[in-house]
Length: 135
Image 1 (cartoon, rainbow, N blue to C red):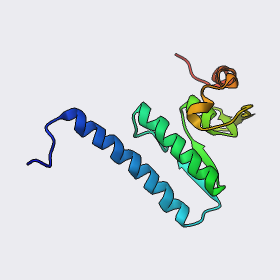
Image 2 (cartoon, one colour):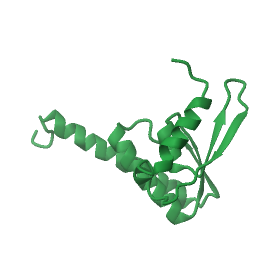
Image 3 (cartoon, one colour):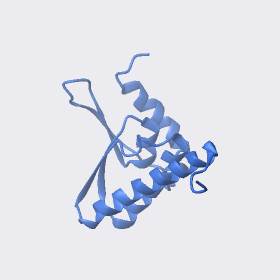
Image 4 (spheres, rainbow, N blue to C red):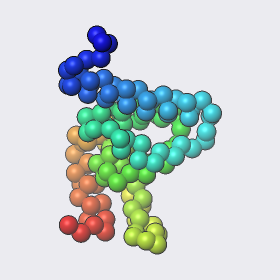
């Protein structure tokens, strides 16, 4: 009975750490097969915002360290800009390539730090206007 916490906040923190760990292990397991290209399909969608940021930094650093190319599918524009060298904007169905953006930060760093770069908001505004999304 002592092993199960009655504190819901503590349980939530343990769950976040567990999901973070699971994401890292999954990436490392994938890298063990020595793929040429990684396909990351909404890799952080199960995580809360803070965990997404932390895990995206970890994944970014692992991919860079291992010198791998990755194709990441995401609907999170900020996530895409902070992690990518290029962003491909697609049209609605049937999908075609609408535009390819090359992302260049004067001082590229981790995804969290890239969000602070002066170029980030310029890319965000430019790409947001191209997305076929109506509120």
